[in-house]
Length: 185
Image 1 (cartoon, rainbow, N blue to C red):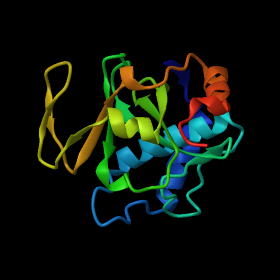
Image 2 (image 1 turned 135 degrees about the horizontal axis):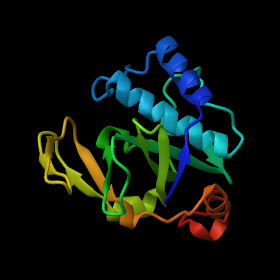
Image 3 (image 1 turned 135 degrees about the vertical axis):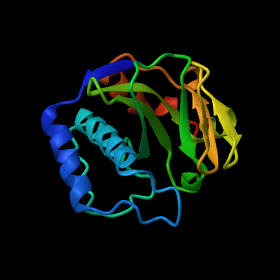
């Protein structure tokens, strides 16, 4: 895992994108405006690592393709938090997005108070399918700090310890560009 400070200009850009585009077009599980902003920030920061600009929202629903690296489609999944990320933490993934033609997931956490993005790691979709856990809508989940929440939709979870590790931006770029890191040709 590694953490970067999110530049103020990126946060301002992401807020503008959220104000000028409607990302709540699915029949369910669209996320709150705060959750949408968290996702836009995560995607924009990761895109900036690869010099791909920032998320602009012009294409509408991206169908799980936030960026393409080494001919692999990548979906950046970002959770909002108010604590620093730990290796024992879990990432959530809504089942509704499972059909997207995504090759790789990059899981991130955005610390809202510190305005920092932690890249928790990445995983190819085939491995994600074998390591994730499923929880139907309405399941009561208990966090590591013993607080609970009820799933608002069908949900998959994957722990940070099951993700491919990355130590910095260069390491992430190197691993995503290496063809031997993927199950698919």
